[in-house]
Length: 147
Image (spheres, rainbow, N blue to C red):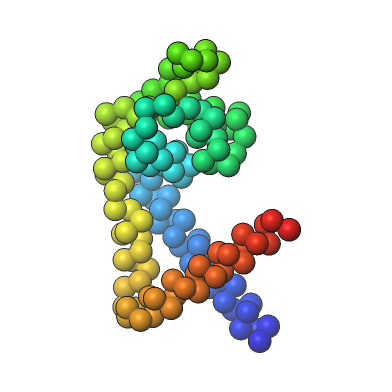
């Protein structure tokens, strides 16, 4: 049993590495990092006009300083704007630019594309079982993280 667990663990790590490598190549083509892409997807898809550095920080689950750095680099690339909040001058409102919205559209199917890439040749029944197992594995990881 332990040998099988080890082999499954190794296969998960190899799959993760392959996905990350493919994803990074796609992101490099548009000039964004993974966390910048995640931020852009959140900002564009939320369609809210009052998103702030603090809101992005909460979404990403990282420090305020790290979020500020990410936002600054994204603003430097022209994919978001940063403006002082009219309610609190210490807070910055983040909004995607037209360039950011276009990039979001360009990235639109990247998760779908990776899913199709990974799941080609796998039956619908196998996909259903695989998805259920992935959810259980993710739940296991999240429960361990809370301990």
